[in-house]
Image (cartoon, rainbow over all chains, first blue to last red; front, side, top):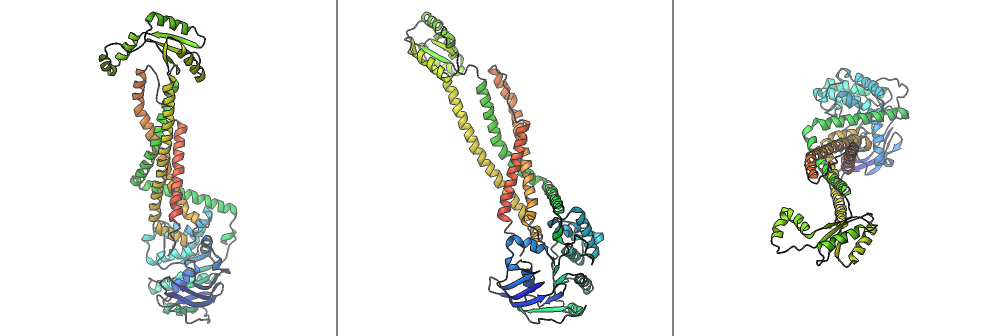
Length: 225
Length: 322
């Protein structure tokens, strides 16, 4: 579902963010991506989302070589991927409902469908009762769950998460991780970047570890969650 | 992804065209409503933009209207073609009267009126400004005159009559009074062209002002635009509310312009009526009609859209998720 073939990314300041990274994530697999900060986790996710282009190598997502995806095709590519951001990236001036509805609006869904799907997604993350609240009035954990609802509302086949438990206490973190595990069980390919080793090693899924831009443990052992 | 079972229509790309069309319509409606709310939410800033646009649109419109009225005045003038025939200085009043009668008998002359030189001086002096000038004269410099009105207003016929009258022995010279009308017509043409140039410049200014306003709106929504692009928003999707913002500013500017021109017309109209009355005319100032006003509002809207488009095309591309 997500393939990296000898992918390198060098930024302008000649800093190599990724060096010769290769891996393959199968459909419906849940994979963790770990490494200390600056190891290249974010760069890797950004390459999948086409926020960056690789300097060398090939990235294939959902069967499409991203090199063939031009500027105008980026929106469609991003629509097929659900992304949970570390800093939530919610529209602060809009209600929880509007935030979650955004991907559906972009895709041109009908009003009725939007209603139904937003309710379902918010229900899934346990925030149905906060539909009309503004993101500002929510706690960090709640905001993160709104971000998750927004990422999955369009039922993408791929779900990316960048430090989804970054600022949350262990109990909340475990709850959020459980959500991701649930999604992977219903057929979504999930890739989660996280430095919370204690938490992710407990979950017994494949772990990709980055160190200074290189993949050090091309883990293939796949545990059962 | 709320439930494991995938209901029909779950795949994003399987949406029917009709559903997408409805969704698209809905987003248009929503963009329009939200951008209007935002424009109205900052009444002072929006009012300033509307005023700037309104004034810039009202200026050329007002000038154009003025020229239009002037054209109407010049059309209303009686006997546009009139010949003033200056007779030889040696001619006495009796001979002049005789000549007036014979000229008046011509087929191509409607009327011929003898104007005595003393009479001419008297009417000349009646104008206060000229009185001082005339007081310095030892004797009346004016010759006897005939005021001849041709039957036809055709310029060629008038010119022929003028030439024939000038050829008469008793006639010193013939002044065709259409000359000043032609000059007025040329002046008006010049005025129209000047207004066109001024108008074009001001329209450009309106577009640029709007473009700048929208650029600020884009800056103000930078975070929002980044997020929308991150979750797959197309350029068109991001553009839509901004174009509507431009449309609202433009519409408002057009309305302000129509109101300004109408107010100006109302202010000037009694003065014009007074002035016209001194000429014994019942001329009234023509203001903007309903259709003209609507056109002005429409023009404002188009300019607003154009300005927004300009700004969006220039600045939106620069905002990419980093």
